[in-house]
Length: 103
Image (cartoon, rainbow, N blue to C red; front, side, top):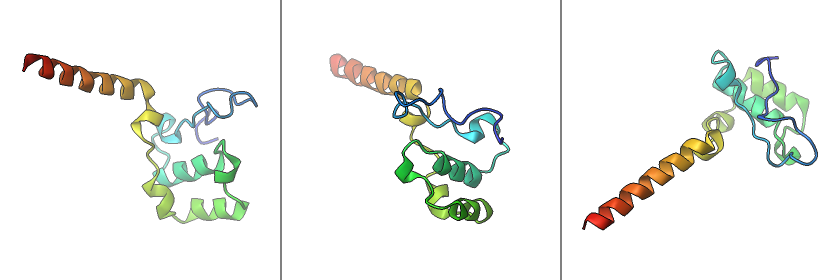
């Protein structure tokens, strides 16, 4: 395996399949190229309709960079680190509230 671990933040079961999140291979092994990580993410996506339809498509994307995957390789902060997102949002709201009180 590329990562030495499963690519999800928890064990996938029928009950939690919608809640588990992909753990980027690059976060565990920085030597994994972004295009390979993006292809892996698509291959193991929890939504079956967003996975590759054919194994040959996966193999092709591993050997030839797929620009559409590479451009979307970095998920939004909310998906990557929900705690940091909430902390950033709360900090921004705090600053807005303080500035509005000081006026």
